[in-house]
Structures are given as structure tokens and as C-alpha cells.
Length: 308
Image (cartoon, rainbow, N blue to C red; front, side, top):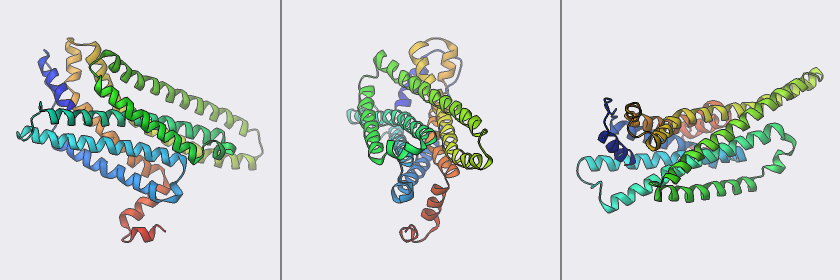
């Protein structure tokens, strides 16, 4: 229901650009499909013991945050339908409380996605450049502690953001989290690939057999880094327009060019929702183990027996 409020604000401003409106059915369909996809990822990781590793735990966390975003947007769209037909009062006390809950969960899913990306990036770094010590450094106990910290921090920060979102400090903080996390992940990427290039040059000096073995090891781990790059690139493409919209709300109130950009708000929301729709396809495309698990879940009549 947050996008309705922003749309009303937009219509009150003077602009030659007409607001772009998308049907509620489109948002509802995207929410339901992405919810089913991400639930499939979560169930696959939980059930398949071969996927019980820190990296897949972090991927499962990312899918869980996507599931939360899909579920809340689906509920929000259902509420908007009831508002349109007059069964709900948009200004009612219970509706406003529900709106706050939905906004809190959406904020939590966003911050959780950022933190999950950071955790996956750190895991890939340790896998590639500290392979011999990886299982001593990134144990399942430590992975569980990291996930507990992520979910607790996201829950608290989401409630604070929604409760005090009208203040400039919270809006600035919300955007700063996005910018700082982006810079951290980009720095880690650049550092990883520079080290990988340096290692490749050193490998070239060894014998052919050592070179071949090292290439096989490096290729398998770098594949995980490439997957992470694709996931993060998708996240940026889907979320950046929405955050640019928030920046314009704070800094550009009357400029007609800013109003024209804000007239595309519902497109930005649809792009944001498509992130949860695309991620599971990336998992399935890049991970052979996940593809194998998905096939069992979807095509085996007795899935629990087939999974043994």
C-alpha cells in the first residue's frame, strides 16, 4: 500500500508526464510465482544434505528474504484490490497497522538481501583464496551465527526504518546502507579478481600437471564467484531505480524532470519484484546439485523416497 501513497503524492505535483499505471493482477502474478520459486529453493536446500554447506545456507537465507518480499507484496496487492472495491478503508487504523507491518517486512527483505550478498561474497573469498583452511574458518556453527546476526539486525533495523521513516535521518541512513554495501561488495569483487589474476600468473610458472590441477580447482571455485557476480548484478539492476526514486523524493521536489522519473514508480516496483523472480532461475542455471534436486522435487512421484 506504500506505492499508493507515493503515487498520490506524485499526482499532486505539477508535471507534463502522465503516471504509468500497471494492473494489480501483474503484481499479484509476479508475487505468487516468485513466492513459489523461492520456496522451492528453500525446501531444496533444507532437504538435500549435499547442500548443507555455508554457501548454500547463505543462498537459502537470500531465497528466504526473497520469499518474504514476494509474500508481503502479494498480501499488499490483495489488500489493494479490497480497497478498490470498498471492502477496506485505506485510512482505517487496522489497515494502517497492516501497512506498517508490510513495509517493515519489505525493508527487512531488502536489508537482508544486501547482508546475504555480503555473506556469500565473503564465503566465496574464503573458498577461493583460503581453500586449505576454509572448513576451519567457515564452520556451520559460524555460518549459523552469521545468519542469526543478519536476521536479528534486519528485523530491528526494519522496524526502526518504518517507525521513523518520515525523518530525513532514516531516509539518509536507508540509502547509505545501500551505497556502503554496494561499495563493500564491489571492493571485494575487485580484490578477488585481482588476486585470481595474480594466482593465474603464478600458476603459469609451474609444471603442466600442477597447472592442470590448479586450473581445475580454481575454475570450480571461480564459477561460484561468477554466480555471485550474476546474482549481485541482477540485484543492482532491479533495485537501483527504486532507490534513485527515493533519492529524488528527498532531494528533488519540484523539478519537472524529477517528476517525470517519479511517474515511472510502478515500473520501478515491478522491476524490484522481478528480482525475486529471477534469482531462483540463476540458482538452477548455475548449480548442478540444485538442478538435480529440483528435478527430483518436480518430476519424481515419490519425492521423499527418491531423495534418499
